[in-house]
Length: 155
Image 1 (cartoon, rainbow, N blue to C red):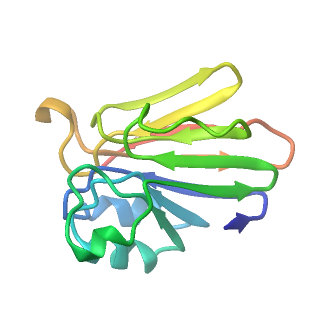
Image 2: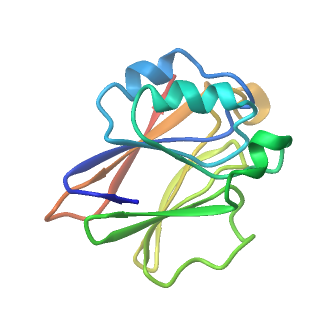
Image 3: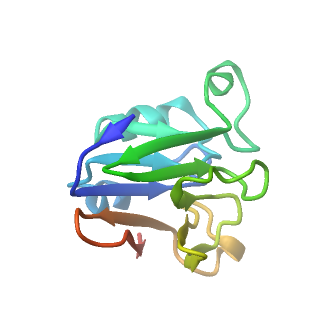
């Protein structure tokens, strides 16, 4: 898949079968949604597709016939930036061209630059780590003349 610049990507993970209503508000003007696994139900993908085109990867709790159609990793070319998504970091080698790596699994939101690559974990949109913090998602902004930028949003 290819997306032109500028682009705003809604990044979500670990929904575990439930789409928090706050996601609709945060993602109201996104060009694309990336779900980094542990989706929990095909209904979640249907709801996200109603917002914007959606790319999703299979997480460790995604089982059943619907989940077998999901890839373990997925790439989207946004302008000339390769955005790569996988559920659990370390399960597959990061593509050499990757400019953004999106992961899930930990339920902990994180935005970090490492050796010129933006690593983004949106946290869990339904079950935050320890259930102490609120559910979160992220917005990834890519512009023609700037580095990718990401912000975590509480739901």
